[in-house]
Length: 416
Image 1: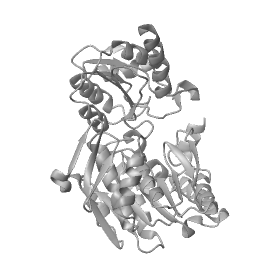
Image 2: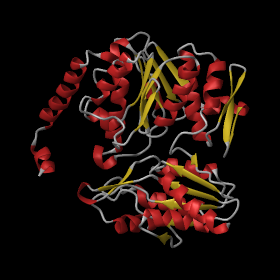
Image 3: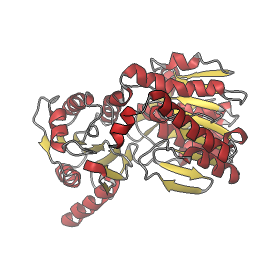
């Protein structure tokens, strides 16, 4: 009934409704973004990780920081896990977060900004000092109607930077991405391109982390993969734009040992690697598999949530089929679609017949039981998602990492 009503409401009315809500929120909290440094981060992948790198550098330099991301909300020393499954929440939440950051004496607030949030104008009435663009890949196609509409929704966040009353305004964009030129041409005071390829022989990465040379200083990160280096360099460019010295960037990045749900290693003394990662696009799945290319891989894959981005299911199945020694297909967030139908769509892209275990807990246990010394078990799709979403709005509390720990303890007890 609610969905039917939404379809009947004219688009201009929906536009005015969302805009009015956002304006009232900003008014109620007295336009807090005008009195604190605000950095937005947008893109398909890497937003949360880039924010964590930036936050680490700013904290190392003695700045009092706040952040709002898919992973957590932090204000000063207080940090709470994001349990709402909403990266950029509505209902006054973003403006309230900025007011709390201001009241807590924070110097800077980092906000993960999404296309879905932009569609509902949650990026409005936020005066940005800077924006980081990470990349763009096909995502939320059913929701937006097309890739072009999705890209346009993202770019509205760039327009928000142009509208900002702050000076100077800074855009930092991953120049290795095909959409970066649009962002770097925004009419702001400073447009800063970022490119991993520009570091050449001065950057390297492996499954334990990576490093790059920065202002004659070697910066080490503890997160694996080329994508982690890209995110770290974006954050380093931001820090330098705010006059943070290389020594603090180095110290901050060195202190960041892991980011929950982002190539997160779960270690309980087992003789093989277990990685929990949020990868939920073909590009990100390929990237995480490439990071562990030298190892035989047992891969647990759920692909996409029910009723959305159905196009990428066989694509991700094909990627897993090519990269993994053994693939276990399982449930992720089926919503009102049958999990078995989603799994069938993934398997359609595979040459080999995968193992299918719809129960995600059992799928993870099975993957761990198959692993031999030196193997890597890669569990992708949910990262830090706090629940599994089922039909008619039902959900069960969930943590991939906690399930892994539970099952590893059982395995290790058996081996004693």
